[in-house]
Image (tube, rainbow, N blue to C red; front, side, top):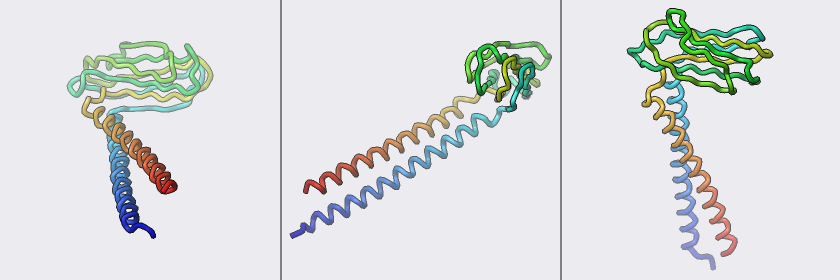
Length: 181
């Protein structure tokens, strides 16, 4: 004779797993939303340029930077099909003086610099190797508040994914219990 309590327990278990699924889904959606919002906030002040740059050619981007807003700037260079000693970068202040000049030594390069005066700072990347796609960006260093939002979204997303794994393990455990009984 089937146990009536077993059916209630199964129904309660399904109800609990449904509630847990909704909670985990909400956590994942919140994590995705915060990650997206954080990345938008981080990159909102950056000016970027993307192009295929052949040998002997350069790619430039210019951005108005003000030390009153943030006294530290940052530039980023991303080189597809990276080749050693093929791409170099120069950063110019509003007066045309070189602030920084270096050879890109890896596919993704990021460097901070001090913004001393307000004006248009120019980032110039030169390619001496074969044609490759290059992405460059320059702007104020994002505030820690903006970074925290992005990282928080990422960690919340991880928690949601861990919740899905736990749900899967519990479901497997419950199926094994059903087979045994």
